[in-house]
Image (cartoon, rainbow, N blue to C red; front, side, top):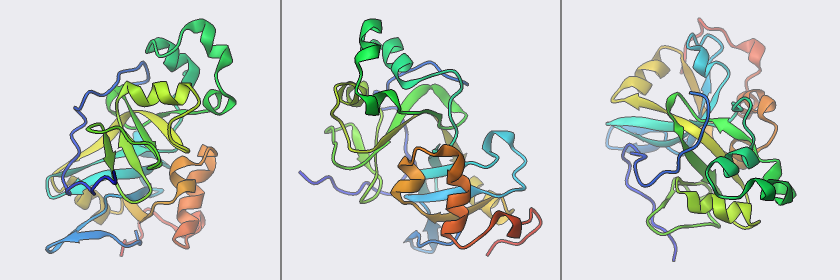
Length: 226
């Protein structure tokens, strides 16, 4: 079956998420009434971002509404934690099986998705994989699944064609994200597979800026935001 697009509401990541061990613009936007919502878009931290947790980050927004917003940082690697290690910790595979994983699985990054609930895991992935009652379609090309079943599928060499695993998420209360954007905290741009699923994490920040026609040297923390 083809999943329906979810209503525009803050995502509440409490639907049987798996747990893990880890460290604690300018594009078109969806509208509802007079409000402009950016779910399905990418946030780009401005150079003047003072919160070190979000400096040079790229965040894919999974949900945005009048009630708040939720997103996943897609370019910040979790230190000292590999994907095979995480699979072992979650009992998805045994320690002896870690050396027999498909090469694609061995190379998957574990990301710091944000500072909220860093012991919980979230997988952003292409829509060719779907678990009824567990997978949430965000837009036509990206879904979110937060159950251990997707990890089991990936470990066996199946699962979605493209996916990233993140521990934790970034969250904003009602009106908070809008305020940060007005204060030159963020730019936004349309998401694409290279920004969300690309493996070159260090290159994503500059790639996102170039996507909206901006070179890093052109930006100033004092510049206005249109």
